[in-house]
Image 1 (tube, rainbow, N blue to C red):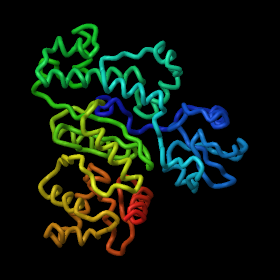
Image 2: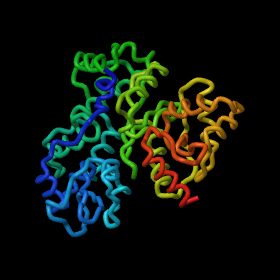
Image 3: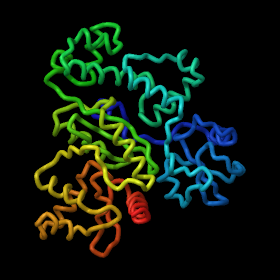
Image 4: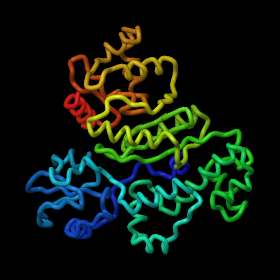
Length: 360
């Protein structure tokens, strides 16, 4: 049920593309396939993005993977020519333009003819949205309009005004769409709450971010195993529905994450709104006090909150942290210094620690 509300499928697989079609894309350096797959070159042990300008291998010497994680797991290292980790799952320029325009005016309705007029192939746009948002572009637009209308209602607009200002053609259609998403009628919108959801690209893969007026309440890699449970708990804790939409905190987050991954930012200013028990909040505050480029053991973290015997409870609270990187649970290691569990994957934890130490 939650996946339907979000408009995402948290258990997606690879795209239905043939090896021959993907090989043709890398020969043509087709930018429409950026973020869809990577090319693993068996003879050199590197992986590239589709637009890499390096000499192309023979088709029998390549295999295609659909995430940086999969490439690492198969033993490939990133190409020094196209630097695939620096722009992992980058949004193509044409699609970025569409998203920016929707952000400025959610009432816009882009049809296939509009996409063609912009030089965009509708099937490619549809494929990109299915891969990255697990919904078609047209479904994404509807979700964005619903989110916009919800906020207008909460700000005091009448249901009629909110519906038509957000691009709906009829009140009945708006009411049906609204109720199918939120589970209640638009008339009750003023007493309800929405959690905004967006997708971000990082060098380590795609992340989902959630925010409310108070601040960021979730930041997780999209392949995190417990992600659907986290969405459900967050929605229940705030008595709110999670919907694709714009939030003022997202722009700040995106800029600061880009600076962090570039090695130039050590602190974040975007407000954090962590939802948890009093004990969990103390644990998460302790995480935020661990300096950039340094690590602490669970025992040390327990001592930081004056609960030296609560090592296991501290570890469990770390595992319940919903805000990666900003609340840096990746900086906690085992007593012997070895890396321990991390929701985003040990390979990401190692990368983050190495990057911070190199830029300390």
